[in-house]
Image (tube, rainbow, N blue to C red):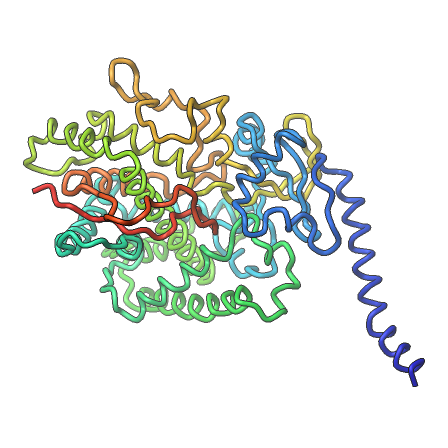
Length: 496
């Protein structure tokens, strides 16, 4: 009886055990083609080294052991981690076409229909052209973007005026603002906070940002999605909400589409997709799924990064309060308190420009950017990189490297100012907050406009103070697709 039981158990366990051993040996052999790094364990690789830790800081420390470029395994997926400026510039810019690929993730295969997740290909070129053309057609340049950001700030301002000196968390309010700006641009519709459709957009975008990061275990260990867990449930929840919602928005627009009256970016996408010139010299057809996932890309990329950066700005103002009055004085000197600054004033507001750049540097809201993939056998700073290798560019590392920045962990906008007090962006050459090269952020102009509008208006209208008895906000962040501040409370004090 025991022999039969042992035989049955052996029959069940031996095949998967052989598979695990074979996969592990194969992975060890593959690692020989990568730069040297920590030795991986079976099944989990080196994932235990970054579990519940800020992976970008761990990678930065590993430079002392393995050098600026090293291999790192999550499950049986080997990554090349790049921490130095020379290497990152090589990946993003100098050899941008060689490293412009994206991983094919089993957990988000349909997202390959969009722009962010697809490899360089005729489809990628068509989608990039489609996205940039639609933004140019609808957004009316920076002035149009500025107006939408200013309109949304007015809604935020009305809420802040009702706080009456009570400690308040701004996280939800700021997130709703930046998401509403994107929804206005995409759908020509501003949502009220309790709107069911808006709540669905908030839920699925927040879940997406929280789950998917460069070092997320699930995409690198795909079989985990078959096990019951909060993460796997979240993925199915994202799909359940996202797919019918985006399909509905597109179909609503197609049913009322008028090429002579473009209401928003969705209309512009439809118009450009019907343009035969957009896909000339290519056999690629623009499908509804392509448009739906372009909308998804805009929603995820266009809201979370801006809201996180605005929240970090407030965190830094609370920690370094002297800049609140310095910024206010610069603005009042220009406007005499009679109006808000506008984009035309930006070149004259040197400290404000420096503060925006310093916030982007210190916060590094996209610390590892998005994962790149080698499209051919190549090298980074002389280190071999095989075709198909996944690349992590540690932007946080170059933004906090003492070789490039004095006292890099301090908020010091003056580092961006000449002795004359004039702003000079070239004073910080190790600075890539929006990545670079062929996969650079398509929404950079919109993000910079939003940040200028919100930063300048917030310091014009309010001071931000630490509530009595509360700790200062934490300077380390929550890592998902972006690095956002932990929730904190502040007292919002009107200036008049």
